[in-house]
Image (cartoon, rainbow, N blue to C red; front, side):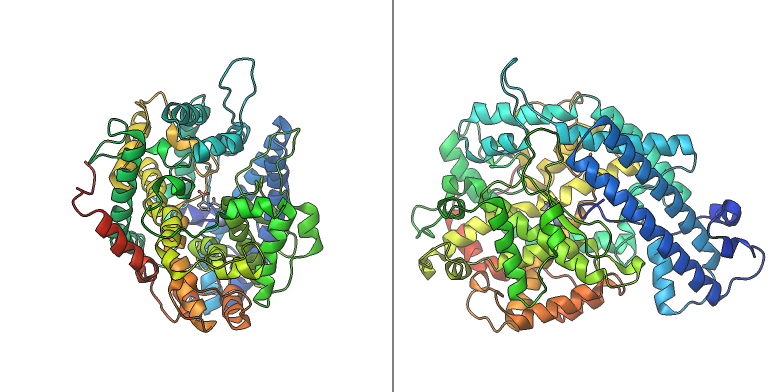
Length: 614
Ligand code: X8Z
Ligand code: ZN
């Protein structure tokens, strides 16, 4: 799939592989099964593998694009078939690659072998019937999600995800919010739970054929470090930001209790998830008006209102996003981007509205797929998606196996990094506001930003903490929902608005679960983007508080960014990080620096309150 789902991986390829040379591809290798492999053979094998993969990926992307922008019975089957072919061939190549395991290879070839063995997000059993079953389930779940609707009253109009999201964002009536939340979460109840159980069984079987314990182990292997070391990194980063999150949670809970009453928002308890302005409570910016501080200066503008007042349409929103990137010295997007992208929701057919960025031919056929609404959230998302496209175009100059991000967090962080430079100063430059708010408004600006970026952090952790446990079997199917809400309570301190037994499958209401896109990338990205922002604004010669700095117009920052992007996945990610920031470790101190004045302010507000939740 797109970015959303790039390719993910495996390691410890199994002995099964030994029997596979007869399986057919590529012939050049199969001719000499008994001879000890040579570096030349390995190089030839890789070149052929890359050519074959490129061909398969392009076919799969075209089928996936049509499926996602025109959901029908047929497009679903066609996308499933293209995926199936890609999976079969990739698994075969990965297994063939193990023939060269003992061989001392030059660095480039060694890395390519490693990446080849990690090239799938979804492996499948080699039994063709099971493989077909798995890819059909996968396509079907994505279709179910894309078609999802809530019909509040029989015979009346049904609401799609955009309309339901608007209710969650703007409605302030607890019962109506709850109804909308429950309405959307019902989409995953019919059939998706059983589909997911089977999906896990078959995906795990595929991962095991490749020598992994389960699908989660395969996903965790993609970070140039041992899976255990990666988990330790996640924990370290989370502990760095946890106090900031807890301060925000404490403050927001108190303000929501003022609004909805302490019978709805219990003191010392988890926050009901439907009151946070977003269907999944992943970003809380939409409730800024409810929690904004009375005693500090307001920024004096609302970006959504400004976009609407200035008469922006979806095209102009995307053009504005593109103009930011070109201000850094990057080339404009190709004409086909404007011809082939989907910016708005078609009136007459089902599509997957969840935003994504595509590099269909792995060269210059770049596209985004969105159902853009004229608001601040989608303005940010446009920058996010364009970040993928600019990164893709840069790394598409690499050999096929290196056409990816340094790790998937980098890919998710890039556009967000640019969006962090959408400061009041920048908005004034492009004429969206006429007056830059004074320094007195800093707390309010930071709070608005924290509601999105800090609130996201534990959300970003939880999705794959849940999936990893589901894949490993630590959470069995009869506990899917219980475990989901336990993790959400533990990390986010949020709770379901009503009892959610095992008749529900609430994880399925979040795109990336039915869409099978790994999620830890977004947690990483929410740390990395601040690290990138701090480094790039320094390169741009910016000073002042971090949240006021912008790289807009900085060719020096653009050059630095481009240098990192051009690496693709050709080097371990610490090298890419170093190219951009001079650090070799992910580091959440940039998050803490950025929000430092807010943290102090929140803690003052929270004085006398008992923070945390039971
Ligand atoms: O899925 C996305 C992007 C596409 S890669 C729109 N994001 C995550 C989400 O919406 O859940 C961006 C932020 C987190
Ligand atoms: Zn993304």
